[in-house]
Length: 167
Image (tube, rainbow, N blue to C red; front, side, top):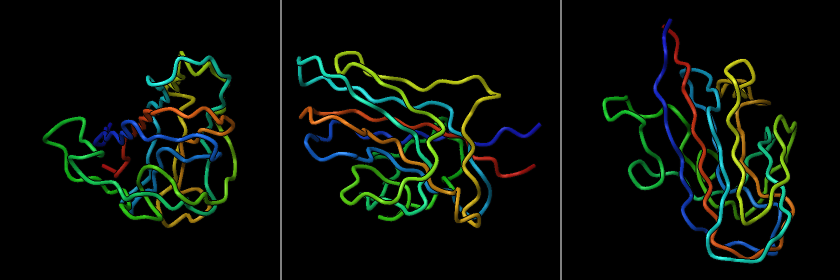
């Protein structure tokens, strides 16, 4: 069985508050295959106020406008020997800190959490969220979104995925 390369998109400390929903990390697949979401998390460490928040991994039907991911800065290989990611790195593709929200579609994962604790998505292999190859324009983008808090804080968003490039 082929196990594809794994990548990590980290958004370290973007200040947000009052502007919700806010896409903190977004993945748009590339031309060589689909991807599966392995792990995602949202935490913050700059505000001591206890606030109820809502995190969503959603399939976007229109991409958010983000800061395009940059290899070695906020996009990392799990293994240094891995090839370069196939993800689409662009302001309408894989990136961080959404400035204009796209259109959210299905929400395969949604969790309420306390801002002092953070939240983490870590499913069993059978429940992993799949992201279609870029040619499937309906299901090729997912966003990790902070959905309903006005808590101003320096948030940390992390999204990990495996690319399924074939044999």
